[in-house]
Length: 95
Image 1: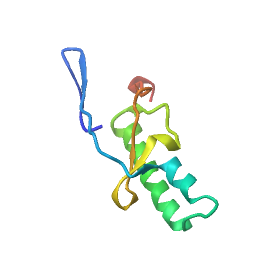
Image 2: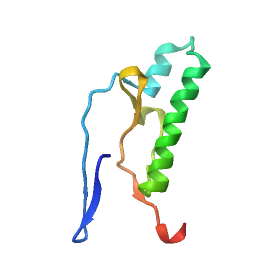
Image 3: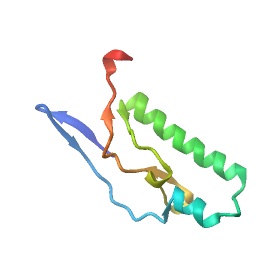
Image 4: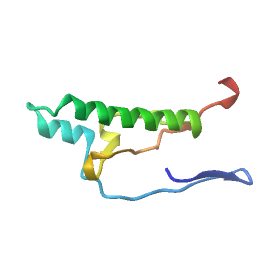
């Protein structure tokens, strides 16, 4: 999500449309029974964790539906988290 703002108590959010090469589930399913190098998975997992930390700590958003099908892979297997249909604002007062 590129932008999120509230103006006059109306919530707005910006969307980005891109064509992904695959989702993470499809990539893993396509490799089975083979696998990729563990270093590849570590790097991918680190990027996903960094994105989730940003969502929670900076944007104060909980995704609430994170799964392999909602992580899309782009050029050079760059992951992007998608499907924010169940997302919600974190209650900042209870931090």
